[in-house]
Length: 215
Ligand code: ADP
Ligand code: NI
Image 1: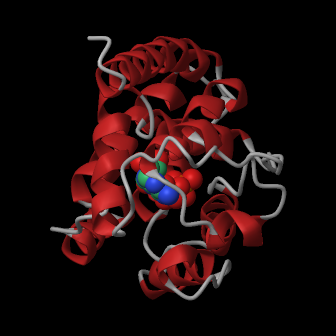
Image 2: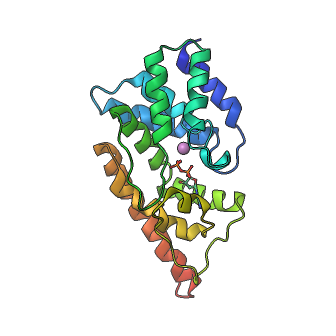
C-alpha cells in the first residue's frame, strides 16, 4: 500500500466516530478540498498536501494539555514508521505544526505553498453550513453555552487566552469563524470563503432576529 492509502486508513481508524467535529468525515472533506486547491496552485507538491491534509488533526494541542508540538511529532513518527523520505516527513510536520488558528490577534505563519493549501482547506470546513454545524457540535461536545447576550465576544491577543477561553458558541463566530475570510491564502479558497462567510452572517442575523422575537 502506498503512503497516502496507508495514512488514510490509519487516520480513518484513529478518528472514526469522534464527536467534536474532528471526525473522519472532516478529514475526508479537508483531503478532497486540499486536492482541489492543490490543482490550482502550480508547484504545490500533491503528496505533501495529501499527507498533511490527512494528518493535520491526528493529535490536537487542545485535546492534549495544550502541547502545541504533539501534532507534528505524531505525524512525523507515523510517516517515519512507513519509511517516508525525510524531506516529506519534515514538510508534512511543518504544515501540521502551523495549520491551527491561534486567536484573533495572532497572525498565521505562512511557511510553504503546501501549507497555504492545507490551511485553506481546513478553514473552509470551519465556515459555511458545515462550519455552522461543526461549531454547534463542538459547543455541545465541550459543554458550552450556545449564546448569552450578556457575554460580548473577546478578540484574544495570546494563544493562552484563546485556548483558556470558555466562550459561547455564537461568540466563536466572532472570535474565529467570521475572521477566516480575511486569512485565506489561495485565490480559490478566498473566493469560496466569501460566499460561505456571507451565508454565516445571514444565519447569525436570523438567529438574533428569532432570539429577539423579531422573526
Ligand atoms: P483549527 O482547525 O484551526 O485547529 P479547531 O480544531 O480549534 O481549529 O477548530 C475546528 C472547528 O472546531 C472550528 O472551526 C469549530 O467548528 C469548532 N470549534 C473549535 N473551538 C470552538 C469553540 N470554542 N466553539 C465552537 N466551535 C469550536
Ligand atoms: Ni481540521
